[in-house]
Image (cartoon, rainbow, N blue to C red; front, side):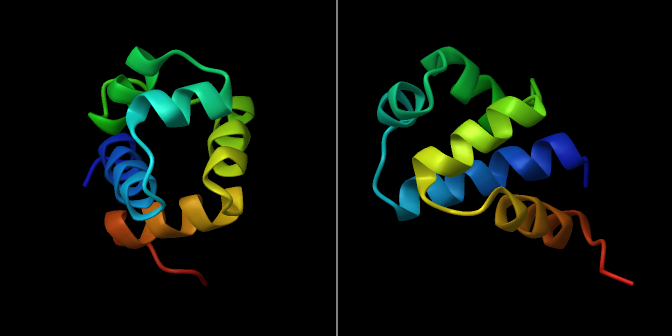
Length: 78
């Protein structure tokens, strides 16, 4: 699976688990709501700075989002 698409799926899953709308996440992360939508659909990828903002807004470590993405893509730690 494409890593960008996998990250988008992870972001959507975690966002829904914590009970936030795209608009609420965008506001908490100080990014545009349409950018959240584009990331979730795999059409755009966040910068490292945005990744950390998203993680903070979701109250999860950025590393957890990356690990979940790796799990989606099928990569395993060596």
